[in-house]
Image 1 (cartoon, rainbow, N blue to C red):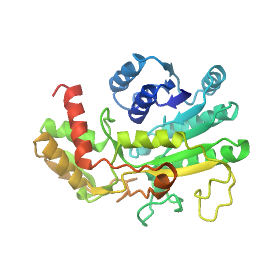
Image 2: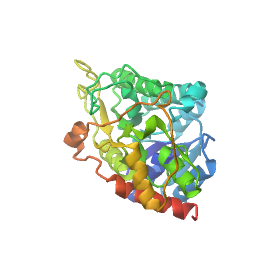
Image 3: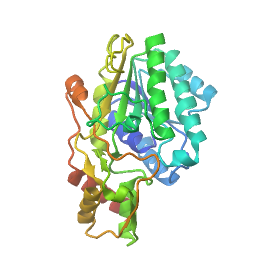
Image 4: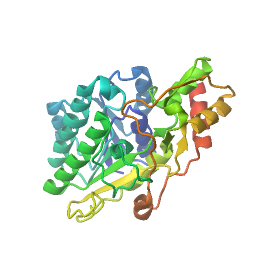
Length: 334
C-alpha cells in the first residue's frame, strides 16, 4: 500500500491506472483540471466511478497553477508520482499552441519542482511515440535520436524528457519516461480515430481516412499500458541507469526511458475493417491525404521493457476493438 499521485486521473489512461492502483490497495490522489478539450461529461463519469471507492481523493487543479501544485505537494505525502496529465492531440496543437506551453511545459515544470521538494521514491511520466517524428528506421528504439519532431505536441514531449533528465541529474530524482504508442480501449477519448469512426459508422455518416488509409499505427490496448506503467513504477532506476537517453550518453542520472507499444503496427484500413466486423456495419470512407503533423508509421521496439520488467503489450487488435465497441454501445446505450 503506497500513496500515489496520478495527474490526469479523469483522463483516459489516468482513469484506468487509478482503478488498477485502487484495486491493489494503494491510495490514489487524483489531479485533473477537467478542461473542455473534449466532452467534460465523459471525464466526470470516469471520476464518479473513482470517487465511489475508498482510498481515492481528488483535487481539481490546473498544472499551470504554480502555487496550487506547490501546496498540493506540501500537504500530501506522495511516495510515487505518475504524471499523465497533458494537453494532448497533434492537430489541436496547430490551432492552440499556447495550451501546450501552459500544460506540457509550465505544468510539467511545476510537477518537477514539487518532486524536487518532496521525498518521492519514483517519478513516472508520460511521453509519446510522437517524439520519433520524422524518424524512418523502424521499429522505433529508445536508443534512436529524436531531434526531428513534426508537431508542437511532439516537441513538448521531447522537451519533457530533457527537463526530467535535468531534474533527475541535478536533484537525484529517480525518474522514468514512458513513450506510449496509440493507446485505445474502453472509456476512450472522443477525439481519437477509433471513437470518431465508431460514432460516424453507427450514425451512417462518412469517416475521414487520412493518408488514404495507408498509415500504420502500433495500436496498444489500455490494459496493456496500465500493466506496463505499474510494473515500471516498481522498477526504480538507480544512478547510472540512463544509457538509453541518447547514443553515447555518459549520464549518471537515475533516469530511464521505455516504449510501451504493441510491437505490431497495422494499417488504418485494417483497423477500419476490424471495426466494421465488430459493428456489423460498413463504413463510407472519405479518403484524404496526410494531415500536417502526422507521421506515416509508429512501431515500438519494446526489448528494454521486456528485459527490465518482463512484460510486453500483447492484446490483439481484434480483441481490443471488440472490447471498445462493447463499452461504447453500453455507455451510449446504442
